[in-house]
Image (tube, rainbow, N blue to C red; front, top):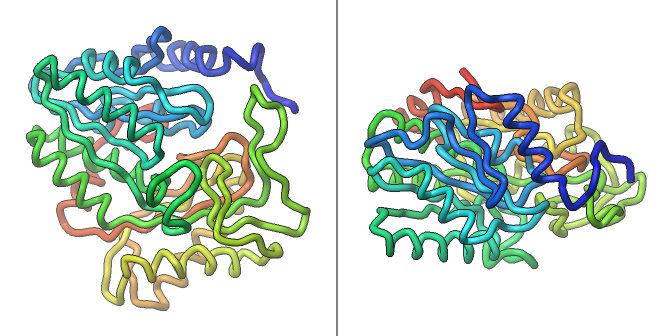
Length: 331
């Protein structure tokens, strides 16, 4: 294992300290318990957005803390959920009096710990609503979830719900907007190699040089099938077809296409795949009107990619276009 680390047990805290040094104008970082907030938190009379989950998926979630997106993010150990106490503390620091929306990826530990934290802060008279992201069409159940996993759609939901909160929408409205995104977003990914968790020191699974895992999870969970390595056209088709069929997406739909690197896939390959996906969507009469390309939901150094499609309407498009300023996403 070759990684730029000191003690594997200190990877998350050391990385958070580095974030604090790199973005003092945007973030406040705590390490005991570990969480990140906007530098101006709490923002009075604005709904706070709080998310989190295991580390190793950066910039998700800590890289999306800032104006127009998350008010706080709670990182757990690598591929491990944060504790309820850490989530509770982050909510207490981020809540500005208008309530808090919790954004939770559908993994058993995340759901349980965020639900426990929500119960704790409700007992302290903080208004809390929760939205669970379940956009991965690859599987219905896995070793880590009851139902579909939350993956790339989480980024789109955090941006759009964050914009609604920044506009001054109330907690119920922000929750309804977030749920609309969750209901209309679908994703699927593929792995060409496995990630290596620092404290384990070896790859999570093995793939032969000419193999790929289709439908992989962001923690290295098994996918739908292991097949021979295909051309870029073949890979994109294997990801796009199940996504399109699931909602389903239809001729005339306007969509946001998010082409995501799992960590080690370079932008040159990612743009190549994105162009193929746009062509295939156009052939079906589906209009790509908004786009995001880059490594935004990663799995350490996994080679691979995912495609996410969000069906847009006028309001979701406006909220996506609203200004955002975070370490990982800014316009």
